Image (cartoon, rainbow, N blue to C red; front, side, top):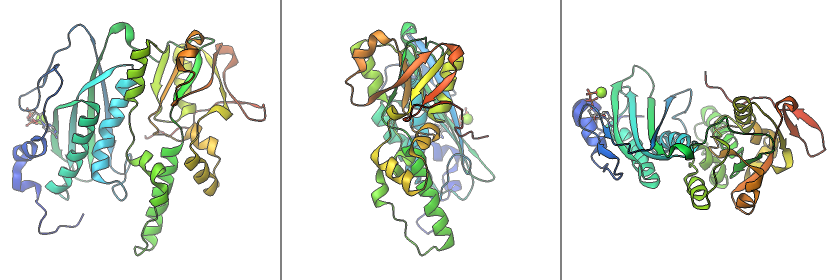
Length: 344
Ligand code: ADP
Ligand code: MG
């Protein structure tokens, strides 16, 4: 980020001036947000519902690369991936806190971009920013988001409720975010080799968008409430389908069979995988960051999900002894192994 005369350094505002500046546009919209930014702690009322809390930390160079991540998208994504965790419990997110460690190379204008993304996410998902922390980092940007949500006790869906005979479902399509990342990484390499080259991303909008600006499946959770469906187990797909279904199997003490041809892959993802000489199904099984919902339902509930345009039934829960199995197009059985990304 090069300094230009129109850029405002952070020390011009001071810590409190900066916090005021960044958060001035945020209003509280949820009745449970009793006190937001400005005191020693936020105050939230919880009625008789359960409170759900989820936190994520994002480190520059590990979880995101500022060479190709617009700051606005970074703010948006940091919020959305946390909201996704609350939805994955069948809950409703209400508040977030946003903490940030910045080095002196960041200007107020750069932070404004991040907060614009946060504001947009708060708007779309109906959550309130109620606090955070602002501190200095010697090198690199670090972000931590906490999402707070609510759910009635009997509506909460854990990872451990899947049972033999349940149907395994996913929303949307898989692998696109991973392929979007491959495209961005390729453009970065080309740029580093020859800075004159302009990226060609226009016909990759879907894949790149899935990586840079993911959405959480709010409307699916609302749909469950409308039709009175409670999944038996649920989680969001952040590491990859293979690794995430294994979490459900392990915690539920069951096995599974995934039908490879039923795993949803978008046309864009399919074509791009082929261009990269990658197996599309491998991208769908092991690529991460799609933030789709993976859930199981009692087989008696099959008709409730059968015709939904964004829900695919991809397999069945089996007895634990059968293990976790992938049934291929050709009728072969492979053991599912977790190859998902691990950011350690
Ligand atoms: P304290 O010193 O008591 O921790 P701070 O000065 O860090 O308080 O924060 C003052 C208020 O501003 C608090 O309500 C805090 O939650 C909020 N806040 C601080 N940093 C941020 C941030 N980056 N984003 C949103 N709210 C923030
Ligand atoms: Mg503080």
